[in-house]
Length: 114
Length: 116
Image (cartoon, rainbow over all chains, first blue to last red; front, side, top):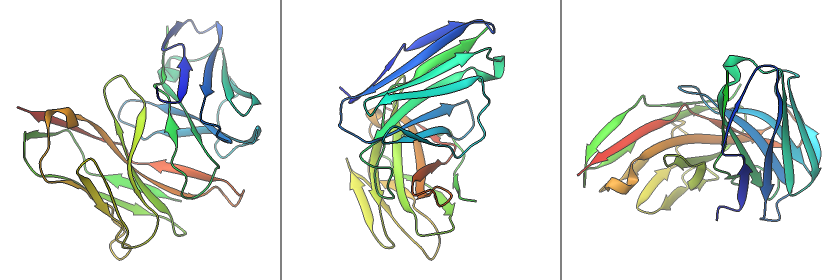
């Protein structure tokens, strides 16, 4: 039990599909994150939510749309993706978005775009 | 901007060998430093951390010391086991463009394979 659960674990979709990734944390944390992990590249931070408010720090294409309805749930809505979007998408949470706060990760969703 | 540089992998060691994975960083402020480990098919797990210069983080036989003078946070273990085979990520936490939040900046990861 990692405390951060992601579903689905694997997703295959066409470029015209719409799908959503789900993340749920059972740790009582106030901050949640989406990362993209591609082969041979550093983890890329996509979005940060602190107390359900989004703090954007990177330019992420609009085909990725996050949603944080409450502090325990985080979604990543996908629309009209490209083949280069195939990657492992990791969700994480931390007590606060603070300097010394370690992040707890889910096991990720492996996304493949046909 | 902030960055983390790790030694290129993969690293292959025999069981009970000594492990060092080098990590150096650049940061504008006074970051906290972390090592994360990713086992096959899983997400990242925090292995150890250090929050200020000269701090030593340790866990499961792994150690790393925050060296401000050399901007390094090298990971070491005296005797590796087959179960240590994984990808290891060095990371730093620094302020997020003054927005009052903090982000983790990761290195590319170093794959370790330990053979019996």
